[in-house]
Image (cartoon, rainbow, N blue to C red):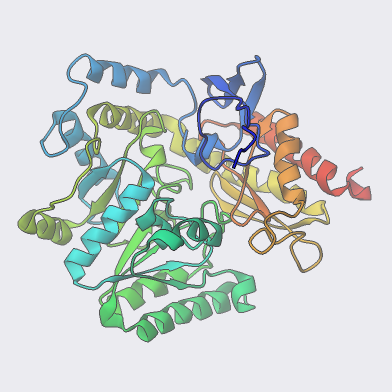
Length: 439
């Protein structure tokens, strides 16, 4: 059968691509801004994929990579390397509690898969529980951990692993808020653990603050109760910090804003400010000893790549030198600016923490479009993203696409925050129609 060949704009096969998509070609970046091949400058209000935490073109990170390149560019992940070891020491210093040993990986997906493998070996239990409407990666293993139906639908016909799902602590999931929501959501998790057979559950994996699934934080008291439940049933608690790590929520790691210590922690993205691919799993002494005593007969060629580890050391220095403090100083201002968007009838909620925020849209009590049940429908939320780009501000759609996500580089100041929110305000007005009070 003959088929008409599409004439591609580029020979590259893009990730998360759409037949109707026409992404810009980014060729330069500086601070909070990127420039395309036509010379158009954009405020990067999403830090590309919530990952360029230190901003674009940081000289200190670049210099760290160049210095390592002059020594040795690559060392096998089965061997030790001084730069790799120094980064592991730095991570142990900033990590919460007793997390002190790092298994390096390449991407967040692979870090979550490694964490699950280590947890299963340590506990002898096969199942891992994750939230519905979560995102933990797009490979077969990490995709099965992901609660986003669209990701699982693309992968599950061809493979999967032993996972179970539980409901996130969202008001609409339990018809509750505040302390009541925390109690109901935690009780639900306990029910799922018991229903699955707690002896078969090795770990619970979740983000401290949701990432692409809507930037929602948990109600106060939720994580404390989750920690108690995991301890009661001998289940490991794994914090997925792929997005929330390295200052995004105002602390080194998002779980530190909840005041509890996980048993394991996965990271990626911001560890190098995305200047080079790097990820990993942080564990405590007992789990580390178990890995060392039993060995680990799996690995990745580029796990803990020296150039990436050098970038990680440079990035941590940059975060220490004022960027975490900048998030703390401007988080309340960012929230206040975003809450002005609630004047739009279409805006249902503004939620987040630090420099990670989601804006959800509703037509009364229901979404304008449910993209999981009608993926081909004309979705006005997608129009918000497009209209913001028309105003030279880059934001992202959430999972599901009933919301948008704002996550600028941690170097963003009040001017960049105001400019980004102003463009988003105008984009919402263009997509949904402007309220009289906003006219």
